[in-house]
Each structure stands twice: as structure tokens, then as C-alpha cells.
Image 1: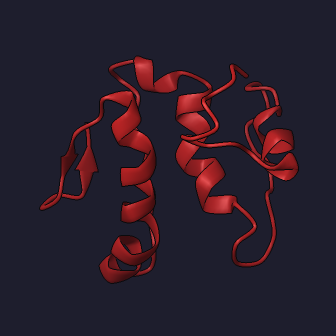
Image 2: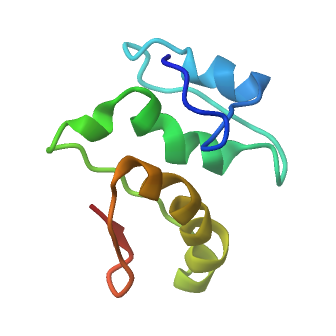
Image 3: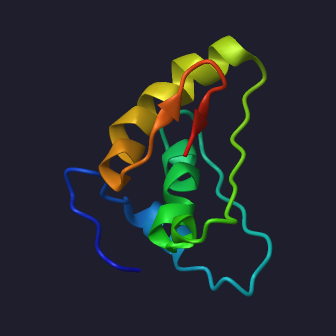
Amino acid sequence: MDQLPAHIWKPNLKQEQFLSVPPTIKEALYGGGAGSGKSDVLLMYGIVHKWHENPKFKQVFMRRTRPDLKKEIVGRTRDIYRHFGATYNGSDMIWT
């Protein structure tokens, strides 16, 4: 994994372990309570592995309701994805 600038995102130990799982492994479990970093590591997974550089790459991030997604995820994506040149479409809640 290439090092990302710490002001963008710095993984904790458990996140580093999760990110080091070889891409040949198709399933991995990252458990933990609220605040353990599960959402952040999933938001960063494609970036860390440079999948976002492939124009065919797509990632879906879901929550039970749209307000939950807005409250828990959208703000965090704004902190991260804009540093990679992504543009946010608020009406569709999509980054490109």
C-alpha cells in the first residue's frame, strides 16, 4: 500500500491489517463497534488499491436510509474524495 498523506487519511492498525489482505481473497471480515473505522476503510479501499484510476471501477456504499447515508457517510466522503479530484453530484449522491 502506498502511503497517503496523513492529512487525508491515516489508517489505524486494524485498518492496515484489513488493507493488507491480498486481492485474491474475495471476502474478509472487519468487525467492531461504532467508531472502529469500518466505514473509513471501505471508503478508502478503492483509493488505496488504486482501483479508482480504472474508469470502469464502481463502488456502492449503502446505509439503511438516505438520511443515514447523508449523516454518516457523505460528509466523510467530502473530506476524502475531493483530494483525488472527484466531483460530487448532491442530487444523485454520486462521486465521479
